[in-house]
Picture 1 (cartoon, helix red, strand yellow):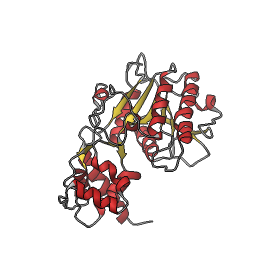
Picture 2 (cartoon, rainbow, N blue to C red):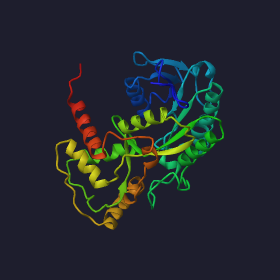
Picture 3 (cartoon, one colour):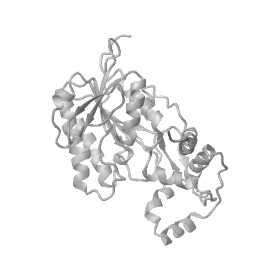
Picture 4 (spheres, rainbow, N blue to C red):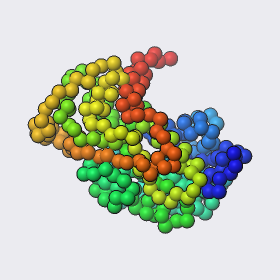
Length: 326
């Protein structure tokens, strides 16, 4: 192989990546899987922590007030920035999202620019582009219209990256699922594991999801892209599913039938309101579909379909629960 004109080196030595957020749901998986693909990983940490064998680390403190950045980024080929405040961290004021998701990201990017990092991969969100639902398919060409502090902070970070001289890419992630997932997906999994038939057959709206394995493949593709990127890219599994189809796939992983029945949307919504659960389950009643065609033009071919991924996730969780503890 020859070294590409732009992007990170592909010959001579294994590329060195700096990874933030390595103790989080997504970061832990990236740390594990990117090493399998031949990358060297330097984890940037707020405080000393136990890490897998073969993984280097650098303690930089709080990303909002980092230190030691020149040394931490020395000889780094690319950064994967997955740290930040998630929307599930309820009660966070607007200023906190701005500080940690926007200002800290931009300051980190400028440090990477000074260190001559070749590519900066920022894990953004579909919420930088739209609210929890959207009336049409999302593409990067659609004018961003975030509806909450979290989404606005991600979009502000993207715009800050565009003001640097870095070769950057903001991956706007659909709702990610995989081992250890929390939030809305964990609640849906809990519904799937319940022993009861569910009144979800009447919900025909579709939602895009993103398997962790498909995200790893996307990051690998953007790291090695031969041309300059400097843009956002949507990352979502190819085929959106209805909530009922998600439950059916999950229950298949548990060796069960879908057990869904029809209730009019209006009746279901009224029942949720009566129980004080309307806000929690409001996204069930609207679509959020995203198109990853632009990423596909970088030869991204997601290895996992959503039904297969959801089935495997529930099967894995069930098997883990039954495994003996040593």
